[in-house]
Amino acid sequence: MMTSVDTDLIRVLADPLRLRIVTLLAHETLCTTHLVEETGARQTNLSNHLRVLREAGIVETEPCGRFTYYRLRPDVITQLAGQFTGLAETARTTAETGRKRAC
Image (cartoon, rainbow, N blue to C red):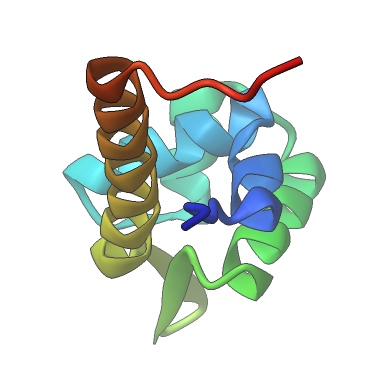
């Protein structure tokens, strides 16, 4: 059985700024102003990355007056981590059994 990993999600998280945003949001819910301060990125650039994260389902928004707060969806990260755990378990089993395809 092949273990499948969500390559679209990995592609989204592969960008260094998006990964930094996700890491920051793992610690607290932040608005765009906070994220600009923390990352040093321009607001337009940050907004584009937040849109990608939102469309991928990694973050969700919470309007608060004229600000929008962003919160990480831990279930998405847990699902991706589970996919890698499954891949590691498959590799461990393969190594233990010595399974290899003949050339």
